[in-house]
Image (cartoon, rainbow, N blue to C red; front, side, top):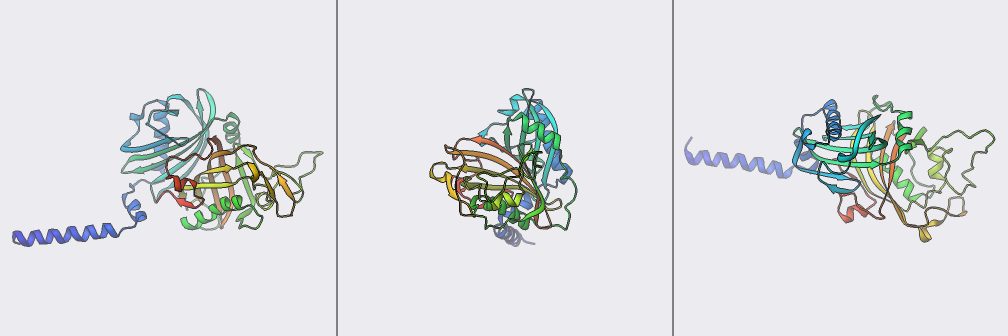
Length: 340
């Protein structure tokens, strides 16, 4: 082959490759760049990360040069924040491992300054390096001790057949939309045995104590932890949760029917505290001042129904951003698959 012919062939090869690259969707590009890292590999990255924090030495974990790190919505340098104050691991461990996209989320108990706390951690792994790390630290002793007492059973394969990631995301997001709309008329895809565990305590299906009467959703003025998942949302009594925004789903595990999300709950207060419930009664409830909760929430979904919900909540400045979204995205109530 002559020099000119060789140059033309090389140019054609580059052009074809460039065209294919440009035609690749963001999702295809993310998968193509994801490392050959299976479930065990991704979960090992979490342990390596935790061990590096315990050593207070970010050099002990393979961070990419361009790594982005946040703690409770604030961007920091690796080695700062909880990296300085963590003193131990706890016994509660729950993973949502997204092998397909190279993301892994972890909800676990820790010790900070020898005090029990909870950590929601999300890592993005590319080419055997951590390119993103997001932490929500919940400094709540009772929550950590409660989760440790309850334990986790989410490591077994999903029952009733495998759903694809889009179906899982759509089902999980119905919970947030139903809570925000809260008119008793939404789509509530709850399994009959659905349980919600929030901050280390059962928030649903708590037995009625001896000598007490179970609150009636038709006449109560506030939600009860004795009700089912469905009764709570159908009651309309969560209306004071004004906005469920920046709904970022960061890891999806179709093999185990799991979805992990970070969101914000806004309580606008003021005239939003007075509302009409589906039965026609007018109720006043909720915080007296505007509040925001930063929330890490995980879902176990079986046969198209939400079977269990695990969540931690942490107070945040009203209207704050996650550090991973634009202002517009952060104020939006649309859901996003942030692993793509």
